[in-house]
Amino acid sequence: MAASSASGLLATAALVVALMLSGTTTTLAARHLADTTPAAAPAAVVPGIPAVPKPPVVPTVPAVGALPPIPAVPTTVPAVGAVPPIPAVPAVVPAATTLPPMPSVPAVPAATLPPMPKVPAVPNAAALPPMPAVPKVTLPPMPKVTLPPMPSIPGVPMPLLAPPPSA
Image (tube, rainbow, N blue to C red):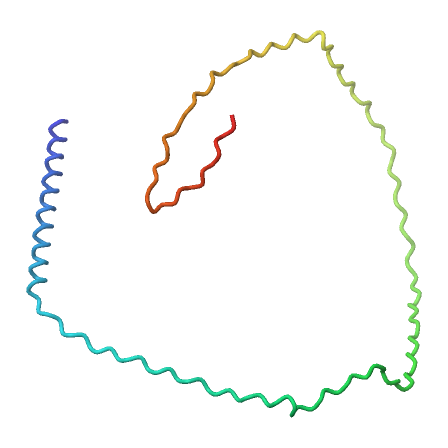
């Protein structure tokens, strides 16, 4: 068992070394390639921002003197001609319909029920055994726990300090 775990550890170490070596050669090749590539062509000139068109001119409002005066509202309502009376609505009387006679409800036959069974009497409380006493359990006091002060980290606001718990 120990031999297989040692060989597994050795294989893992060899894999880590191989990955590290392959990573360094790739980085070196990328740097070499970056150093040997020709310089890029200069960027095209960015066209300027077109001028913002001016808003149209708002016509001026004519002078107040040129407007006609507002007519006055009359305080009394002119009398309207005679209004014709509302025509009377004829009373609608429904036609009397004859209903068939109500059928008679059949009588329920009288049934004799058996007598109710007697309920057994509750035994006397004095005959019951006494209730066992429940033992009183006392717990040891909880130990006082003090927490270390909260470290202050620059740039991180401190939370609001809560008042200490009441004893």
